[in-house]
Length: 128
Image (cartoon, rainbow, N blue to C red):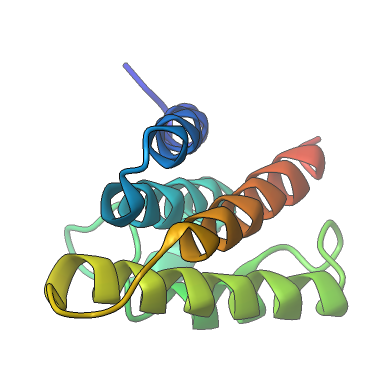
């Protein structure tokens, strides 16, 4: 059985492969999901709150990262940066998945992989 942390690493590897293959839209989706999974792995279970859910909604994620990641492990500047990068990743993912006429290119893919990799590395490094 895969953990959220495992899914974060798997999706990050997929995003990198998709970027290398020129699949910009799919790369943006996987990059966002890798960050989503990495942050979800570190959120306190009791902060997720929705009945029957073991993960936050996509709309909640950036706010939850900013306010619910353990402040003893993630200082306020890091939590703010995680939230900012999540919002950017999510906006690119929404454009990739729901705006077929939108203009997305390899620079968006590179930015998304960079942000996702930073989140996965930063959140994973804080694991005790």
